[in-house]
Image (cartoon, rainbow, N blue to C red; front, side, top):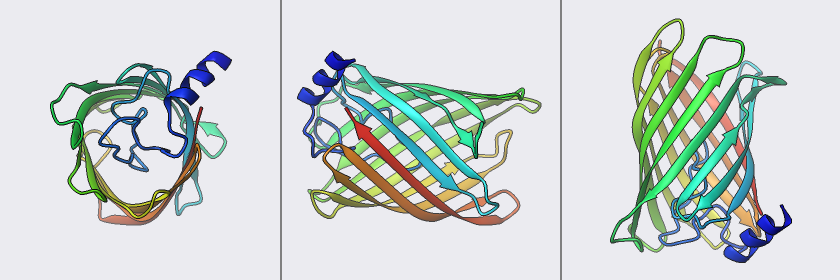
Length: 231
């Protein structure tokens, strides 16, 4: 573990935070994050947790560990909880695709599997990822794909996560994240999450306050916080 940490320390700029170790250095979305940014270098290691508060008083949080086992490829293990109860078990794999415009554009893929604890339900996601830096301060990132849901009811759902970021300073970035899920087996939803990212050394904090609209016209405010630490 000491050797692993030393490798990660030598490979990373301690001020880069959640930005990629290679150009075009596009931030990660807050709610639907990546397994390390695309283009991650072998040996990069991160632990983080997303915390979301529901108006009904439920607290969702998801500690996870991310590791780049090869240049451009990463694996993630996550343990989503609701209050003190483990809700699901989740794992994901991500890869970076080759491309000729690495200083402005980067793309890749991600596969996610999640199994509910104590319930006959599981889901798998297959996503195409693409990021573009179109200005020194402005960048955008997209995640588009499908979700297969299996349980008492089966279904397939279109997924779309689209984010716009503005780099305010070396340590601060503002963003707007939108997340869409088609009807599938568990219903349609649309999330809009304005957010701010603040990084200091290897600790990164992302905070957002937005709203979620789901089937039946239900709207609810959403509060999200992600804290990550690189090693």
